[in-house]
Length: 144
Image (cartoon, rainbow, N blue to C red):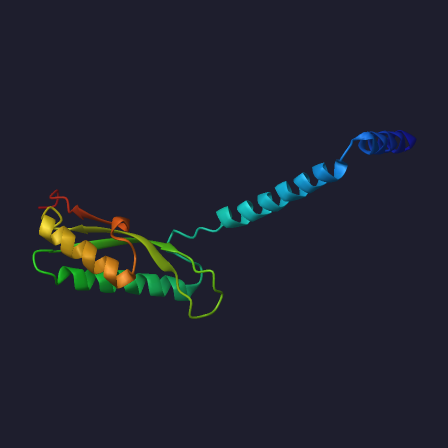
């Protein structure tokens, strides 16, 4: 037991001998806070679009289904599949739903530049996101 006390005493003496120890303590505290912050923010899967909160999941699913239905009604678009990358809101209120961050649209008419422009413009205005966050691709012909 006395060996442990001796070692602790030696460590304390060495710490007292360090000049400006308060700077090292402050840097250590900042590093710990950053570690805690990034551990919490990286642990949240914000972009998955699927939440354990049933309300968010229902909302995201409903938005995707409605968007697919409406986009498929546009001339020359054909069958549509939509993938949305969601970001969580900072609010914790019940009415705060995730916001779309990026959209991929896969459709039969995706090879037509006119269709692409109309889809990108429509989705950008609907979600209020930049057009460069939307990608339109042509559906594969493997099943035909």
